[in-house]
Image 1 (tube, one colour):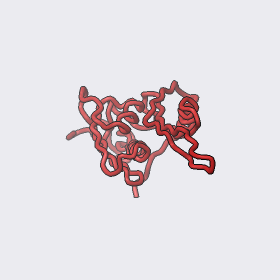
Image 2: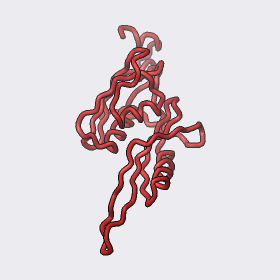
Image 3: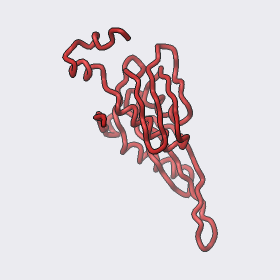
Image 4: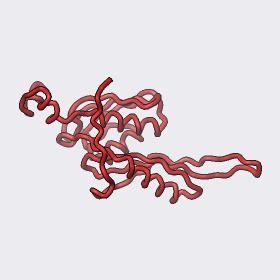
Length: 173
């Protein structure tokens, strides 16, 4: 099992932007009929390596979104970004959702599908190649993407562990 380097972040430390990933109308069947409410999945981030996800449910759309944003601010993590991309390839998994993230050269853009794109853009990653395999359920894809991002090691940590200089980490790349 790989060691993850999850660094929790407090919501008040930076200016956060939010992006809605999915909004569903859900029904609760009662004796009197169906009661409809809304379920919102939202990702928040500062565009500088901080990202989080949240789920909110309420009778009104606006209330569901605000609950989701509040929940996402409680689940913020710091991810390592190197020159606008990820430092190395990484796989992530949550439930049946599997994702693969690969660094890309400058000018490539974010090559990723719906839920993954929202997470990567809000985290501040500008150049990346990403593929989602398995489940296309937005909840699992978002959680798998954040799992992959938290597993990424910074070049400085790798250099320190190998007892070499940072520029030697990138030789041969």
